[in-house]
Length: 72
Image (cartoon, rainbow, N blue to C red; front, side, top):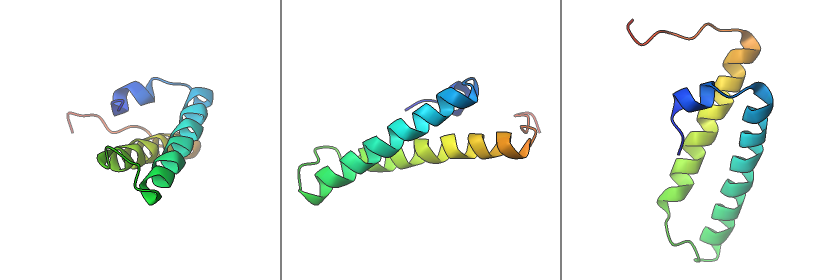
């Protein structure tokens, strides 16, 4: 799982590729879970969280929202 700061350093094309990769991974994890073949169920939660972070960063950039500083 990448940190949000690492994700923010990616450009829009890389973020969209990461989004697609995470969506495929989530599909595969859910598929494995439905067949009781999933060894690490926590991976679903981690993948969903990372996907949400990517989508949030893409949305912030689309709306041109300035990033809040950590000191505030």
